[in-house]
Structure formats: structure tokens, C-alpha cells
Image (tube, rainbow, N blue to C red):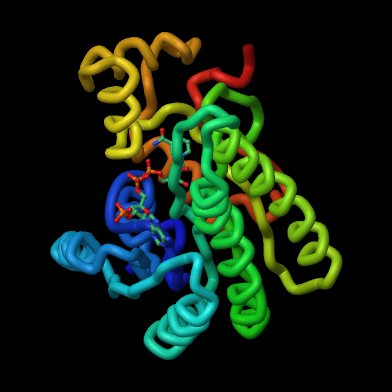
Length: 258
Ligand code: NAP
């Protein structure tokens, strides 16, 4: 298969829906073999089916990103089925909305477990696999809320800010050790997914109204689409970005330029 990531192999976490689904589909359309990794086996299998129907190569891997044993097993499967790991997209993420004084410690820990522990575990186990493959690209999906704060999202903002600097620290390690592994973060603005529809219903009582109101927060005047994040991931995953590591790519319609 030809394409911008032809011959490469990828694992995308949280790929059963939303941004992760788009990323998996785009990488596969551009020639990568893709492991669709998620806790939701039913939706994950549907994503794999759609990729195969479009002549792409994909398999489903059951992965709870908070479980180290699950990461070991997932990367083993990718290496044995695809022959190595070249691209890791740490995309799985959750948000819990609550003011800091009312947030339970359990909820705080739950957000941290998925959003930053999961990124750490994925990176920890991908790096040796990528060394075996002779290099690779790790792309961590942070958020505009890893660059700027928002009320009632302290845990989410803290976790996504941590992703940003974790990315830079690991980029330095991997840049200087000659492994050929690059590590970058992407910071999406509001993107139209199930996660965002929850926000629209909660804060505006209606999806269409929420999309319109949240769109106004972006100088470009609308919310983003999952495919617009997938396009950035594709660039960072491909050799076109081979001089880019430790960088943060805001794909946010200008939200953080204000
Ligand atoms: P989404 O629609 O909620 O999809 C996230 C996927 O991750 C779901 O399939 C979810 O499964 C899965 N997941 C949740 N916990 C997991 C775990 N422990 N292990 C493995 N998979 C897990 O989210 P999205 O909107 O596509 O967001 C994707 C990423 O972009 C997240 O990191 C998010 O923080 C970030 N982001 C999103 C926006 C936005 O506006 N949408 C903006 C900035 C950044 P279940 O559905 O079964 O829970």
C-alpha cells in the first residue's frame, strides 16, 4: 500500500470512537497497519471492520490504558502481528467536571489515571519496542486545556498540562540517546465528538446550541472536526516531520492565540 505512513505500524489508544477513531482510519488510509486499542471491544471491532472495508489493515487490541499488564500485552500483540511498533498515539482521555472543593479524590485520581498515568505507561512500554524497530514517533493528545486553564476542570487541566511537559522531557531523552524516537504533543480545541456532545448537553441543554456557542470561543468561528486532529497526527507520525520533537501543535482554530 502506498501512502504517507506506508510500511509503518501504529497503536492508537481510545480508538473506538471520536478523535481516536479518526486517527486510526487516517493512518490506515495512508498505509499504516493500525492497532485499534480501546476498552470498548464492540465499537473497536466496528472501527476495525470499517478500516478493512476501506482496504486498510487493522486489528483490535483490548486496552485499558491505566493497566500496565494490558499495555505489555498490547505492544506484544502489535510486535508479533505487525512485526514492530513505529507509531504510538496516546489518545484515550476522560474529563470529570467539578469545582475543586467538591471534587472527590477518587474522581481526581480517575482523571489522572487515564490522562497521565496512561500516557506514561504507553510511552514506557513503547520506547523499548520502538528502539527494536530502529525509531518511532509518539504523539500525545493533550488539549488546549493543557495550555490554559478552565473552571471546574482542574483535574483535566492538570493532567493535560502534565502530558505537555512529560512529552518534552521524554523527547529530550529520546533525542539525545540516538534512538530515533520523536515525541510531540497535540492540543486540540473543542472537537465535535461524544465527549463534546456531553459538554453541550450539560452546559447548554442542547447539542446544536452548544456547538454554536463553543464555536464562538475559537477565532475561526467554529469547533473542530476529528479529521482535523487526525491530519496533524498523520504529519507528526510521518517522516515529513523528522526534524520535529518536543513540540506542541495547537489545532484549535486560534483558541490559544488570544
Ligand atoms: P471520546 O469521544 O470520549 O473517546 C475516547 C475513547 O477513549 C472512548 O472510546 C473511550 O471509551 C476510550 N477510553 C476511555 N477510558 C479509557 C481507558 N482507560 N483505556 C482505553 N480507552 C479508554 O473522546 P474524544 O473527544 O475523542 O477525545 C480523545 C482525546 O482528545 C482525549 O484525550 C481528550 O482529552 C482529547 N481532547 C478532546 C477534545 C474534544 O473537544 N473532544 C478537546 C481537546 C482534547 P468509552 O467511551 O467506553 O469510555
